Length: 282
Ligand code: NAP
Image 1: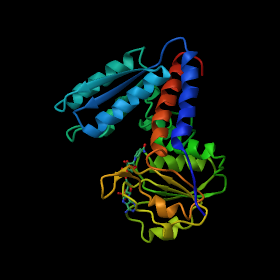
Image 2: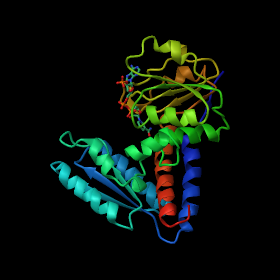
Image 3: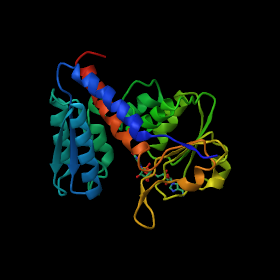
Image 4: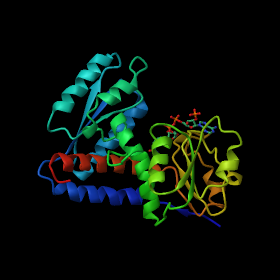
């Protein structure tokens, strides 16, 4: 068996086109502000990609660059002023922050209705309880990938490697909402293969290059690779040993071109949702 590829780039393009069409119908152009503190080169690239994507769908985006030496108080003040600005629909603070600034209070300072990354504790609470808040972009994108291949999680066993606040934990909540049985694993889980081999859907989000091998995967499983790593030759790769695992899986996401494009597409979609709510359309 050779797995079919889940083409995240194509699926993301569909969401971007949908977003663009909806943005065109709004009374006021939506605006996203991305805050970068310092000059982490990876963050600079991520922000550039987000801003380019905004431009393509007609969302106004603006990057607020603060120096590495910026204090927590200054950053909080910048967020407060954006919270009060009626023309701003989405505020995103690019992580990681410099070590002298704690991310928790910063993320909680963003108004929950402008929290298009879905990281505010209010939106996290909504995710765990009633739903309806902003969903974090990467997990929401994974659910869209499964929808796009017509796969229902109802009654299926999903196994997630990694329990971060931005991927593993929120994804578990979204999958529970879809009536999957979810197993979460992490670096303290003994005998990881025991769990991974039971998965109908296996999601790897640990940040370890090519960690998931073919003998860890059940025949016919769907494998979602969130990882963004460099292999021994410096080439971009995921957490899954794709060449080997695709001989066992039924569907698999590539890296690049799988989950990554979905994360940006869902950010655009969340910004659209914010603008629609603020313009009384939703
Ligand atoms: P993170 O915050 O570093 O968390 C990693 C998680 O993996 C932790 O829960 C950790 O366990 C677990 N883990 C690490 N090594 C493990 C092992 N050997 N066995 C089992 N579990 C292990 O990572 P993250 O932010 O979720 O990101 C994970 C990966 O996804 C990274 O490569 C990141 O770059 C990528 N990513 C990609 C996108 C995208 O859009 N494509 C978005 C977000 C993240 P403990 O909790 O026990 O430490």
